[in-house]
Amino acid sequence: MNNQKGLPVRQAGQVILILILVMSVALAIGLSVIQRSLSDVSTSTDIEESSRAFSAAEAGIERILSGGTPPFVNFSENNSTASATSYNFPAPPGQGDNNRQRPFECPPGDTSFAKESVAQVWLADPNSSSPTNPLAPAEYYKQTSLDVYWGLKNSTDKAALEVILVYWDGAKYVTRKWYLDQTDAVRSGNTQFTPVNCSINIPQLPNYQCQYRLGGTLGSSTDPGGPLPASPSVLMLLRARTLYNETSQPFAVQAVGTFTGVGQTPQDCWLPPQAKIIVSKGTSGQTRRIIQLCQVPKVVPSYFDYAIFSEDEIAK
Image 1 (cartoon, rainbow, N blue to C red):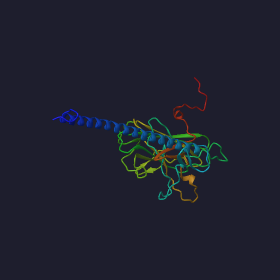
Image 2 (image 1 turned 90 degrees about the vertical axis):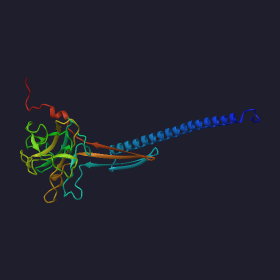
Image 3 (image 1 turned 45 degrees about the vertical axis):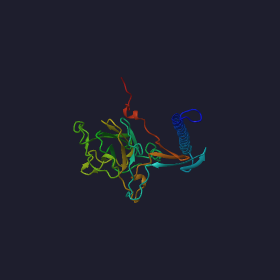
Image 4 (image 1 turned 180 degrees about the vertical axis):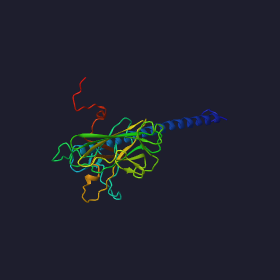
C-alpha cells in the first residue's frame, strides 16, 4: 500500500525514526555544549572571586604592616572586603591556665620545623634596655627552669634535640648546651646524650612525643646540668635544632614560672613576645581566603651556630 507521496508506509515510518534519532543526538550534543559552557563560566567566576578574595587578604596584611594604629583593619574595595588583625605571640595565660603561659611553638601554630632548621626563642626582651648595662636587657625570664617539647606523637622518626642557651654572666656572653635523646631510639646509649623517656602523655601539647625540663626536675628525671643561671646573670635566648631525623618535627618552649603578683612582674615568669601574628580574611562573593603571616624580628642567622669565634686573633 502506497501513501499519497508515492512512498510505502513502512519506509515513511523509518524516515521518522531516523529524524527522531538525529534530533536526539543533536539535542544531546547541544545540552553537553551548554553544560560545558555553564561550567566554564562558573569556574571562571570562582577563579575571579578567589583571586579577588586573595588580593583583599593580601591588602589587609599590607595595611597592618604599613603601621596602621589599631591592631585591626576592615575595608571594602573592588567588590571585595577584608578584615585583618594582629597580635603578639606567645600571649599571656588565659583563664584556667593557673597563670602559666601557654607553650610557644616554632614556627607558631605549625609542626613543620624542618630538618637542619634552627629555632630561636628569646628569653629576654631585646627592645628593653637596662640603665646600668646596655649589653643586658632589663626585662628577661627569671625562672631557673624551662620546658622544651619536640617530636611528633606516634612517629617512628625519633629525633634527638640539641639546645643552646645564651646568657650574660655579668661580664660576658656564655653558652650552655644540652643534647637530649629518646630512650626508645635505636641509637640510644651510643650517643652519650641525656636520655629522655618519651612514652608519656603531654596534656598541653598532645601531638608531641617528648618533654624535658631544662634546669629542673620533671617526673623522675632531674637535669644533670643543674638550674638555669640566676640573677645577676641574664638569660638571653635559646636556640634548638633536631638531630637524626629525616622528616619535619615540631618544637615548642614553655615558661615554667607562674605569676602570683607578689614581688613579681609578668616578665619575670613569662617568655617575652616572640613574633607578631597577622591574620587577614578576604571575601569576594561566596569565596573567602585567609592568610596568616608570622613576623619574627631579630633572628640570628642559622650559620651563626656553625661559625668560629675567637676572642683573640687567629694566627696561622
